[in-house]
Amino acid sequence: MKSLMISYSRFIFRYLTATVFVTLFLFTSPVQSQEPSFTILCLAAHPDDEDGATLAYYNYLYGYDAYTIFYTRGEGGQNEIGPELNDKLGKIREQECYDAAKIQGSKAFFLGELDFGFSKTAKETFRFWGGEDSVLARLVYMIRVIRPDVVITNHDTITTKPYRQHGNHQAVGITIFEAFDKAADYHYHPEQLVNGIEPWQIKKLFFRSFDSTKADLYKIDISKTISYNNTSIAQISRDALSMHKTQGMDKVDKNSPFFFGNRFYQLVRSDKEYHSEGKDLFSGLMHNMKWNTSDLKSYETKYTYRTVNPEDSLQINSRIKLNPAAHIGLVKTYDNTIENILQAFGIRYDTISADMLKNGDLGMFSTVILDLRAYLYRPDLVHHNKNVLDYAYQGGNVLCFYNKPGEWKDKYAPYPLYLTNLRVTEEDAPVTILDKRNYIFTRPNIIDESDFNGWVQERNVYLPTPIMNDTASSLGKYKELLAMNDEDDPVPSTSLLWAGYGKGTYTYCSLALYRQLKIFNEGALKLFMNMIAEQLNYDGGKRQ
Image 1 (cartoon, rainbow, N blue to C red):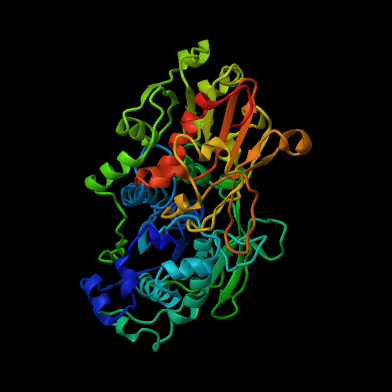
Image 2 (image 1 turned 90 degrees about the vertical axis):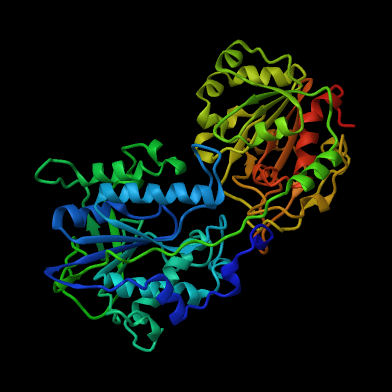
């Protein structure tokens, strides 16, 4: 389980008591204003999951108060602009949320739940978040302070395939569905009802529909413009979303209908029947008095990540075998993990420049590494990928780390590969080595299944399959080296693919190896050293 990575102090004691609320919100005392208005609240599992467009729509066009509660700070995701991960990434993403909120006219708060990586089920999510009631109680408290009339979310309560969302998203849908009643219940966590805080009844709860053909949907037209500057709500939402740079949202196509098209919402719950107006989520509601939430504070995320002390790292270093003749060429992207490992072990390497790719000056390298998502972050690689494949064909070894489906083309590999969103999220999922004689598992380090113990967060991401309509010719070219899957969720055995190509070799690695290398996992280090030594043991295209 992901507890192999993280020892969470809040898992020991997370039940919300009066002491917790007094500690966190001692100075929170909502003050009623004399100005009537409406309040809209958006719930989001992660920083880029909010519907900023709808918040901007009601804030800019109607003057309503707009809030977002983020369940996590997104620290478990990938960083698309730098090497920061975990709590450091969470701090960056928290600020990105605040920056986006300023643009769209909303206020951002955080429940402080842990982003432990991709999850497939709400069951797993609640286990890592300390139980459903622990999450629900925090949410209810914030609802009682913010006092929203309308709550929206991009998430839902579907927990079964094929339409289920991320497990964290499922947890959002489940808890807000319950909170609709619980926030108004005097008997639910009555210790919260201090300093002027009272039970609060949400009037309407909406789940966003991504199918605009459904009946009885509410449509939010974000092409509408602000009268005083003629700026459209769509433009505001684009500007706000672009603040989430660590998630690549500044690169989203400004004409994307998914991100910047009209919004459609389905009414899921209401406290009573209201007159329905299909273009206004607030139709039929009566204005309420504004409340002062200026003293409301977010929950902090508590975590302790596993680290390796210098003494242990020296011992691990001494046990890892290297190929002293290795000379690595690195097509570097935004992460520094591979470069740090090469430096730590004194392995000779050079970063490959755009000119080197253009001129095909790769023959001096024993291995060329294509770093994480290289085909998105290195357009020079896209333009000169043929030179990399030629290098392999002539006897070189190419090691390509994972890419995402939308930034990958099947022709980038020597034999077509089609990338999917399939992954194995249970980092302790059993691993089977399918070809123990392959020298990726034998030279210079002997590797067995125990070397996959102690991994963190996930096993693999964006698993490849043979290209559609080319299964026969593509499938036989790659050797599948590892098999693994989450419980009751089989996936292709394609997390590590190896192929002979001409006189050389090509390895495609979808393993979340960089996360393991960052914590100096010994098994991951052995596997990495074997992969970059492979070409020097390659004999005319035959495995030994």
